[in-house]
Length: 360
Ligand code: PLP
Image 1 (cartoon, rainbow, N blue to C red):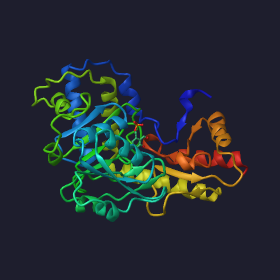
Image 2 (image 1 turned 135 degrees about the horizontal axis):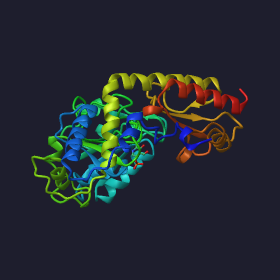
Image 3 (image 1 turned 90 degrees about the vertical axis):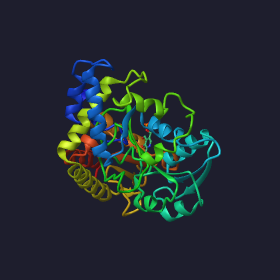
């Protein structure tokens, strides 16, 4: 089966939107070409619309989602600062690691895998943290944590939210929810290949930037010079121009479709997929009411070798799904229905293929 037939239904990357493939076919632009700078400005504007924010400092960081995570922390955390981190999966763990490397006193608030974080417990963990950090959509478990209560109760703290798997797939309201720093990644619900990390920072957070970030590459004081024509673009950065063009096209697709319509499409696919997997005898592992439509974690029926069936899905049908992580490795799958992959026909194909392989 040709690789062009692959259907990417793992935890990311998703299949790109058609406009994105066309963007890669355009002539390459230099990073200081006025045409490119105009495209970059428009990409930042499109990101503001998708993040639902008026934050001036909104841009794609050159790097994957983890670069967005590091950029978020290194610019506001100095050694000795208290950072409360909610942990209910792999990416909350990674936040603890990144914060600790910045020298933070990390206060962890854990929730069991498959459960959302308890916003009350996160807010009660410390009387005056500098930062409260949580993952909105935990890709390791398929769980959504509610952000609004954290924004209302954050007090003096900065609210830092990972929206890698949520942006473009479920509502993300940076301004309305009181989020100070949010980062994402291109490869999930934005339907663009991996390589950029959209990031947005409130004025309140900018005022509290550390004097000298511990990373040169991710120093937002420097980078903001590059993305802002008003700041004179003095900072030299060879931006990945083809990727920015691809992101511009992917965001264009999402905005042309309409954010609400994109959320509804993801919701409908997730619902159909989850109902179908239950019928096939799989267990849904994420707590009811907090299940992500774009990332479903399922426990396999008794006696089924997950790696064998997952391999057959790829070899026989060209469909990729992801294996479980951590404690769930070997007994579960993570199925993505994201970006251009979130289509009814993909759900139907996957369910039919799994049914055939299991003889059900
Ligand atoms: N945060 C979440 C929730 C993720 O799902 C991922 C990747 O899957 C990351 C952060 C890290 O992103 P990347 O792998 O693009 O560096």
